[in-house]
Image (cartoon, rainbow, N blue to C red):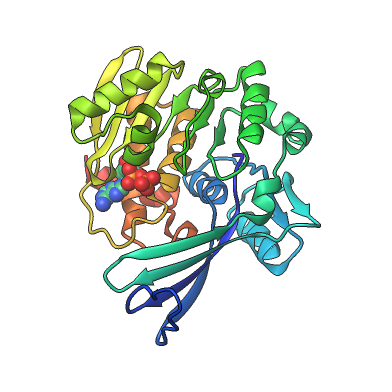
Length: 301
Ligand code: ADP
């Protein structure tokens, strides 16, 4: 995994405070977050052997983020400490009605560099897969994808948060995993139903991506590759908090693919992991274990 590590500082509030307003009565909690770290933990709990390439500060948040990753068995030898920038932080308000408002200070994440990728090149070359997102600089993602491509290591890119992407990056990607918003930004096609999902996938494939897995929230995911396209339905669960559903999906997907499951089975496994995660609060705390995922799949045959 190459990507971000943040600490989420969350206040549950009666409603989102307005500009200039001080709102009392909140309840505070903090949790490890950041798309890179979330996906690393999602993959590790799904049964994968995972190394994270990331950058945090020399502050207490960075210290705690690394400790948490270690606890989940993630190899942190390529999580670099930045002497100049603070660790990434997200300040999150969650209102009673589920609405949220988030501000992110990327800090050290913005300084994860192609030189860092160079230091981690051995780890990338030895991997079954490389997974990246877009919360770290694009030049770094491209550098990592180039190292992987040269070594014959397939690259999964989760293009989140939504951002336009150059074809020279898309050409390096084996599997692209946008959600509906990201697919729309990348293709201009509003993904409302299956036919639109098919068109969006075809457009992305025409830009050089081999396989597209378009996640569709509770509906599951739409899968398109050279062999054809199909819907892989999601699982019905009682949703509590959809934060990081996409991250857990990508983490679990990468493990299933590294284990050489078929694409359809891998997406089903990822749908199950993500469905379990939306029944729980928080980002990394919501990631299910391999045993939980398999038990869930056993029940839903
Ligand atoms: P993101 O979290 O990036 O916005 P999605 O909302 O598409 O992405 O969710 C990613 C995956 O999480 C889906 O493909 C699905 O497997 C699962 N998922 C999301 N929301 C639900 C839900 N309400 N019920 C069951 N599964 C869900």
